Image (cartoon, rainbow, N blue to C red):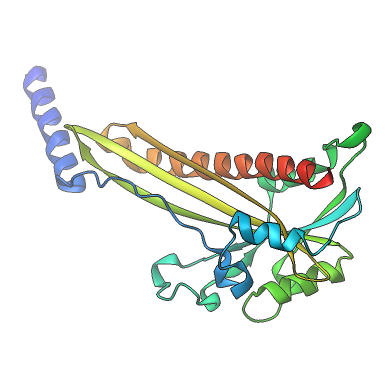
Length: 238
């Protein structure tokens, strides 16, 4: 009697999984393309040639330096229709490990083991009015008495479904950052980071797996950006 009940229970669970998740195929993840160009035409092409042109302007920060950090994010990406529509973006309040990672830049050592960053400050939404632009972010950095502004953006793609008969959850996150001279608006350095991961999971645990993978992938991508930016700062000091 119990074996029959168990058999029907297992069949019911399988059927419920099919009803909930269907037979959707896993869509291959494409690389997200974060674009700081939504903030300003000056950020439309962060090529090496353009950076060299900016550096030729003889803008040299004095180290150790105070850096103002701003993360610009689209809170409603599903409603973003125009690539250059800054009205869909907002400054994010940085907290937890992400904020601590930027504060740790004060531990960076450069020439003669001297500190490169004196202090890291965060630009929060209260310092801006209206849509975020590079000019408004520079004004906010100036209010904080920060000679350098680091602005970055993070964009993601997600997918889940059946891949080779196994239920798969995937997440792809990418960051783009620019280091800007607060006074002139010239771009002094750039940094990028990206991470792509996939996991095979049980269909009934897919929702929790998606949340976990999203959280971990986004955090690790930002950590990679922070490491790459620290390297860019050391190069700028030379």
